[in-house]
Image 1 (cartoon, helix red, strand yellow):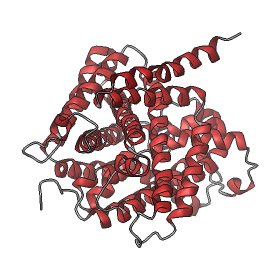
Image 2 (cartoon, helix red, strand yellow):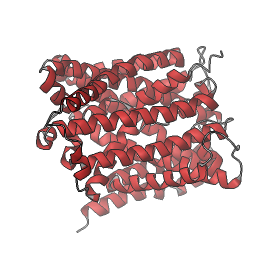
Image 3 (cartoon, rainbow, N blue to C red):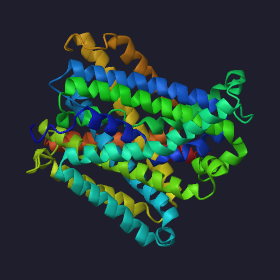
Image 4 (cartoon, rainbow, N blue to C red):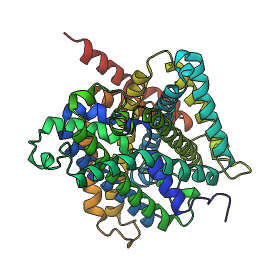
Length: 458
């Protein structure tokens, strides 16, 4: 086995599921409580859209075996500049999203170790300690990170499966609190379903993980599609089952006021002390996701450097066969985001960071879905594979992403596109075209100007 190819099927599956199931899912039932049972349909729609995107990535990984990852797909379809813009936005969203994940994981740890919450400096130090520990692990090798993903994914599934087991047991006992018929009888509202679907989307980000790490995957044509589809499908079933059960078992007003909705359910049946165990599992969940996402934030600039649109240093591999330079530079940027925002409430940080991160990732999804349509039209995709219906799948996936972007809200879209616009002058500067870079500055400034006008116009 080469040093580069270190991830087999089970590690890829754990990477996909582990990156999707972070610490945020433990808070989502409280965020979704105002929408009641509308959120169940929201989960179903998001799961369906995510499975469509998973099918797109799976099919592309089979039909474009010589290239792997979102940057390669968008560059092949639309050219170097659009490919760079999409990949740049995704890379920065990885850094920003990792800051949010690290912050939330440490906030759960503070429930177990109150001293962390009592000192901002200590909280920041602990957060950065975990960040750099995982960077060191990734520099050591993708296989080490893959092994950690298997362990942490198994652990983070335990509280989720415990809630499912509780629901099945109550259902078999005929418990009056569990009435699945309410889901069918409920009158769903479009506004509530759309709002819920927008919130649940965050929980599915990461379905592309095996594709992004494609150069580290053993037998990528076989393992990437299987891990992507199975990982997304299993995660969707777990999400929908768990959150539906919580909605049925806990009154919406109680759920909306809860800072720990999972602890609310588990504490009712297994005692208040179970909340400490849940905090531990949530911290493990977040930290496991962080290690997997840090792997990706080194891989993407490595792929871009190989294509000549990022500095060559990002494309060099260490003695362990890993993009150490990209991991370290991304780690420095991640540390800066963590330190800059540690003066605010942890929940405020999380909400603001995922606002930008989600939009940039959605644009990447859109680029890949539309890219699949373009490549199919050009006839450059290799025929065959296990997903022959690429054209309708990619079209439906693109429509889903556009719907999700529309539901993300004006601020999310504006600041997300501001992040993307920064890539244009950077691309031209990298090419030595200073006049073109200067000419692109109005595009960059247009988004903040529009934001000011829309918020302060009389």
